[in-house]
Structures are given as structure tokens and as C-alpha cells.
Picture (cartoon, helix red, strand yellow):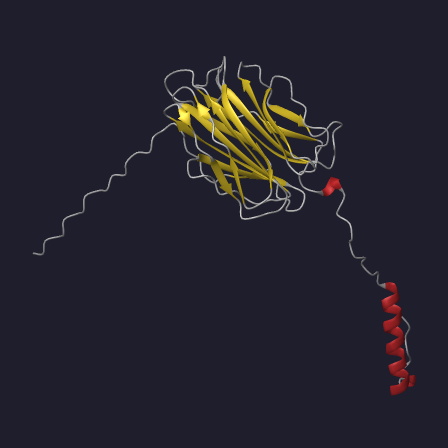
Length: 288
């Protein structure tokens, strides 16, 4: 920074000195460039080539696991990992949202983590959320009954068609997913134990919701409709019947999720709602 002698500090020269100093300071200060492109994939939350989901807790041999993988931009699809059987696959054409469901019968050889490759070949810009749900009391010989899917509706509500169960006490699992959104679904009235999972990216991410309910008698389940308050990318849905191993309906044991999980409601779907007991009113205290 230049200095000026006190003897030469006349008003005009002082003004010239201040102006020169400001010009030099501006030349030395870097100007931030406006960001016109999104950050690289390596610094974006949940931008990965594979989705890892931990093994749920409290498993016993004979339990049945249901895996849900909601992916975005996993071009070429999501290969089925060893040990899992595909139930349903819904592929929205432009890959904004892609949802796969699988089942696995627990036999004690399960790894601590399962990995789903996102795309063929794996796409480092893919996004995904996933869940594994553990159920007990499912028919391990033939665990999956009727199912239905709904693909690619854009709007603030998504419905999936009714399915017909052929035996009593099927557990009905409903799954909804949306791409290019980090919102949350409001579930159909029938669903219990509802969980929303989002990876927190409003532009490139996705979210999914699942819940279940018991069909005590055989017959149609009715359409299931979820609302989300947004109309961004595209919505897909699945409805899946889990067949019981006995006269009792299957029960949910535990859940493992990948993504930013928000647990809205957790309750055992097999337990009937108990009537609320209102305690008797206390008698008024007697005055002496």
C-alpha cells in the first residue's frame, strides 16, 4: 500500500491517494465466479454407484425379508444380488424413478450388509433409497401372493390397483416411490407401521414410503392411494400380498433403511388396536 507524507497531505492530493488505494485494493481482491453447473457427483449426498442396506435386527431362521430399492438414473437397471428373488420391477422410461422389490428367506448365512449396484454399468451419478423389512410367519415355500403395480403417473397423488387374496390373513405391503423429490407421502388410511425414506435431494433424489395391513378374509384389498403434495418427477407404486405360514397373519419384526429415514409411525401390524380405557373420575373431595 503506498504511503503519503504528512507534509504533502493537501486535500486534493489526499483524495487522489484514497482513490488510488481503492483501485489497488480492488485489483488484489479475487472476484467469486457465479456457479452455473451443479457440483460434481462426488460431493453430492447419496450419489453412489451402489446402495448398501444393513441386515435388519432380531432375525430368526425362516423369517422373510422384503427389500425395496428406489433408484434414479440407474441406467441399464439394478441387478438382483445373490440370494434375493425379484418380486416386481417398475422402470419409468427416462429413469427418473425405478423401483424393485425382492424377497429372501433367512437361513442364518446372511451378511451384515447387502449391496445393490445402481446401473449396468454402475452409474456414479445414480441416486437411491432402500429398505429391508423383516417379517415372521410368512409361508417360506411360497411367500408371495397376488401383486399389482402402477407406473409413472405424475401428480400429487398415486394409486395402485386392488389385488385379490385367496386365503385369509394375508399381509398386504404397499410401496410408493417418487423421483426428483425429497418429499414425504401421506399414506392410505388402511396402512399401518408407515415409514418414509428420503435421500434429501429435491432435484435429483427420490423418496419412497411403505406400510402394511392385514386382510383377515380373502378377497379384494381395494385401491390404495397415497398423496405427497408435490408434482415433480414421476410416481410408481406396488401392492404385494405376503401369504401366512399358519392361520395367523405375518408380523413385522424390524426394518433397516438407507437414505435419510424419517419414521412416521412404528407399530406391530398384527396386533389389534386395544380399546382405550377411560379411568373413572375421582370423587370430589368432601369438605369438612
